[in-house]
Image (cartoon, rainbow, N blue to C red; front, side):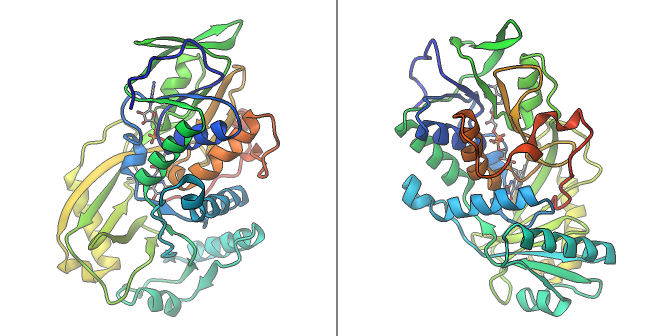
Length: 385
Ligand SMILES: Cc1cc2nc3c(=O)[nH]c(=O)nc-3n(C[C@H](O)[C@H](O)[C@H](O)COP(=O)(O)OP(=O)(O)OC[C@H]3O[C@@H](n4cnc5c(N)ncnc54)[C@H](O)[C@@H]3O)c2cc1C
């Protein structure tokens, strides 16, 4: 798959073959550009391959809701367009609030979501949440939100589907090639360097996920993306009284959803320092289980089968960074998705391709503009898991 010779020139070089880079390669190829995608390992071998597969539209900022609605529509028609299943399962997302402040935030989120066209989302009372997941401990719950068209999709299926479709549309997608340098001429991007040779190009897109800042530094630019480890654990065979949706205990960030014949459990650790460490901290499992069995006591009869860790790619306001890098013509950024990059990748690949093709995307990408940090502006996304 990856043994083709490195071309000497490319109209555009995409660095990183996760779901974001592969979606962009496909959408550029479909638009008539023949991009070169370089992945230093295997396609989908970075954060994408560690992700929980969640696809939700329940965000706090209007732009994230619109982008996620577009992604959902693209995943629904993925088999027709891309030719393979995206493994989309619209089992819904249930968010649980256990303080009045969280409930007030949820109510504001729902208002933003309705305003951005997500009409099927609703604010529930505790009885409504229990009707969906009867086994929840509910003494401390205050409210919930529910969106039945949210759900799960397959990270590998979507990534490899886009990569194959990108190749069919004229893109060159190569694995095992690391970009180790970006050459500039007169301050503008002129080429990328790899161990296998140099590729002259006027455009580079940084789709390196949690490594986006390192790629930015190759071009002398600081990209504010910080890596943080996140864990996932899978139970042995385990079921509840009815099929469960993706359920998020917003206060603790503990979440669970069905996976195979068991449940997938995840939670963030607020004390986790920034790092590229992806080893499993098994002592964190005890902490997670404590919160998990509080919210879902039935889990006391479950057993953990396995676990893994991957990296979130956090930006300062927990929104993606999409656009040309300030002060570095030719370097484009498409990173910083802060733990929601899988679900946003279909739409973002399409929208950024439109920009690169010189067209106006149907969703204004201004809220994701890289220069927003210099202006101290930007509305932070608060629905981060
Ligand atoms: C535990 C966990 C759970 C998650 N759950 C969800 C979820 O439910 N839903 C959701 O939407 N998101 C989730 N995410 C986040 C999601 O995985 C990421 O936002 C998304 O995968 C980012 O995709 P990417 O293509 O930008 O990055 P990656 O998949 O990391 O791809 C970047 C690629 O760039 C390559 N690369 C880096 N440097 C170079 C270089 N110099 N040269 C060549 N290649 C290079 C890397 O090898 C890598 O393959 C989760 C993440 C984790 C860790």
